[in-house]
Each structure stands twice: as C-alpha cells, then as structure tokens.
Length: 183
Image (cartoon, rainbow, N blue to C red; front, side, top):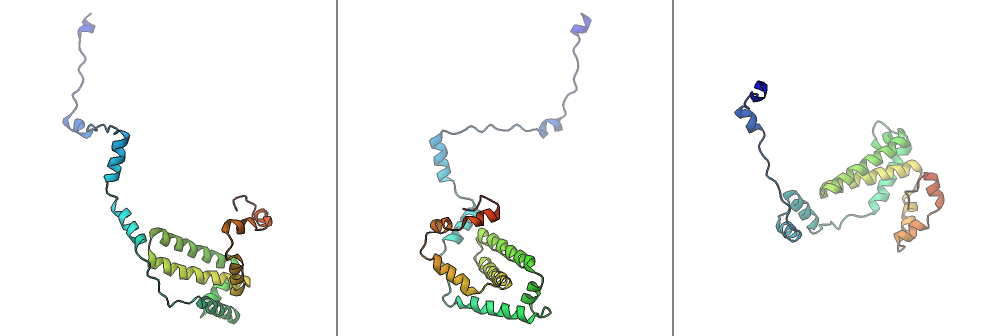
C-alpha cells in the first residue's frame, strides 16, 4: 500500500518550453453566403492587380512594320548559308552545326517567348518573338522551305475553321507521330 500512496514527482516544464508552443486559434468556417461576400470584398493581391493592368492597357501597335521583312530575312539567311562563312555569320555557323542544333535553337526561342508572354512582359515578348521568327526562318532555310510555300499554305487555310482544317489532315501524320494526342 505504501507504494500506491506515493506520488511520482514529474519535473516541471521550464518557462521557455511552454512559450515555444503557442496555441493556435481555431478558424471556424463561415456560412456560404458570408464566405462569398467576404471574397467579393477582398482586395486582389498586388501581383494580380499589376498583371491585370498590363493586359487591360490599350494596344500600342506601330503601323510601320511590314511583313515583307520576313522574305528579306529569309533571303539573307539563305545567302549566308550559301556563302558558308562561319567566322562572320551567325546564320552560317548555326546552319553548319546541323538540323538538330537548328531545331534546338528554335525550341529554346519558343520557350523564351512563351515565358515572357506568360509573365505579361510586352516588350520582351516582342523581342523574343523576333528571335523566334528568325530561328523559324533558319529552320526553313535548313529544310529547303521557301517563305512562299508557307504563305500559300496559310492562304489555303484562310477562312477555314481550325477544327475542320485539323480534321482534314492526313491520318498518316498521327501514325507517324506514334501518338493519339494530335487532334
């Protein structure tokens, strides 16, 4: 019985230990109508407001740009390819590295353009778009494709629904790609 009557003494917790674990306040859910009202009254975060303001600005599109610059650029890239001067021409150097490198550079520029567009950085998107178009033209030169061929294809598609155009594509493309992801 003596054992039962003895109390075990437990060490007291120090003041520092009790302060280290503050109690959290319970967050009670609000009824549905109050939650919606609170959300409507909440001010959007600064980052959201900034992004929205960029997209809501009126477009300031210069009117002096001409699409013929692409034809001239293609001619320049083609002449650099023919000259083969890899010491003085970036285009010739890139083309000399082969199709995989040319295609890789196009992919890199496409990703950079997408990133800038996603961030809403208009000036950088314009700049990256120019890089992307340049590298697309390098791919065309490498593949022996003239701009006129692409312009004709675009004219053929003009006025055709995108859904109808995709449905008309040969099924061999899907088989060759070995995927069902292509529409």
